[in-house]
Length: 329
Image 1 (cartoon, rainbow, N blue to C red):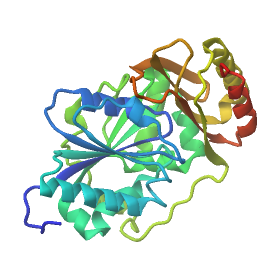
Image 2 (image 1 turned 180 degrees about the vertical axis):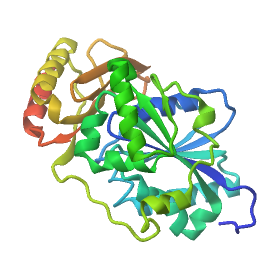
Image 3 (image 1 turned 120 degrees about the vertical axis):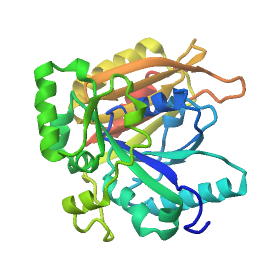
Image 4 (image 1 turned 90 degrees about the vertical axis):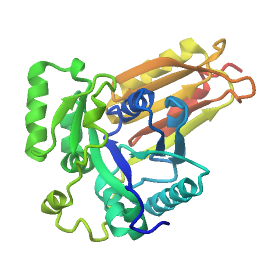
């Protein structure tokens, strides 16, 4: 890597927030904006399969997926390697980008990720941690903050807080949530982001990360940190090359949400629906489910359905069997 006297370091934005808060929606907003910059995106999924590449707008961006674990623990070495590889390609002229955005899994503690830019000398010389942006789900935040320490860590380390889904709660509930967020993190400005619509001037090039402020919150921030997840939270993937019947899938989703909604932290997928030439995208959090039409299937693309479920004590085999019954044989 080049020495410390190189030109301005590449700014890095760490995009965090609990499962289903709207990080990918915000990232799509950033990628689609006419800012004229090339962005390298590092995607991290909790579990062995990621589908966010199918959900992202892709044009000139370099997108790297990390699907073999959580970015804040087992794959931090991979993060160092990927950042190093990107730097080498940029210096050699084989790849150009102006900035990097890291979208963490919703179960990530941002502290070990941010720590990477201060304890890894080569990374710290080449890159600048510009800011940590936390997206907060206004509908589910109170429960998430009470039950999952990662959600509180994400809020506590944020340089900017963006509230999503405020249209699903009352103004008084929004005010109550904002008061709770300020009690956790008084230094981070709070804004609202409706379907990812946010002022990019408040997200990029904010020079918001303040190491001294973080050391006040967590004095051992620069020490090697360990991180554990709730052992009851697991993920699994359903995949099939058979087309799915639209009516049966709607029925399955309805039953699944009613029976397991409280334990379904996040579920999302790309579905191959019989008779449809476009990908069908669905995303859900607890009892809230949304679907949309994705890109057309390419002529040479294998049509398959890939669904990711993240939750607590989920009946994996029962869900797989129910999905198998939705296939058109």
